[in-house]
Length: 96
Image 1: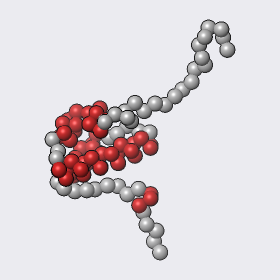
Image 2: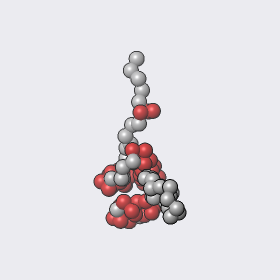
Image 3: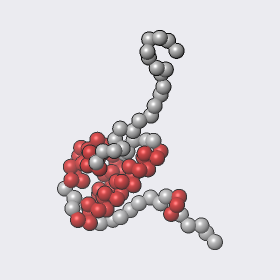
Image 4: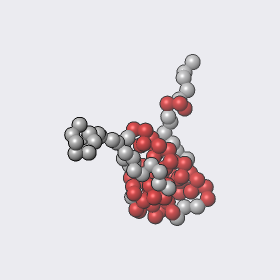
C-alpha cells in the first residue's frame, strides 16, 4: 500500500432508495403515479400500498429498478377494487 493514505479501490453496490418513505420511493419512480397514489384513500389506498410494497421488495431482491407501468397497473387495480398480485414461490402449492 502506498504512503499516500488512500485505501484500495473497492466496488460496492448501494441501494439508495431502500430506506425512504413509500411516498418518496413512488415519487422517484414516476411523479404522475406519486400524485395518483397521494389521492387514494380507504380500501384503495390499502390495496395500492400492499401491491407497491410487494413490487418494490421484489425489485430489491432481484436488484432491478422498479417498473413505472407496474406501479401504474397496481394503482389502476386498486382504484377498481382489484387486489391482484403475482404468486411467489412460497405461495405455490404442489399437485398431489
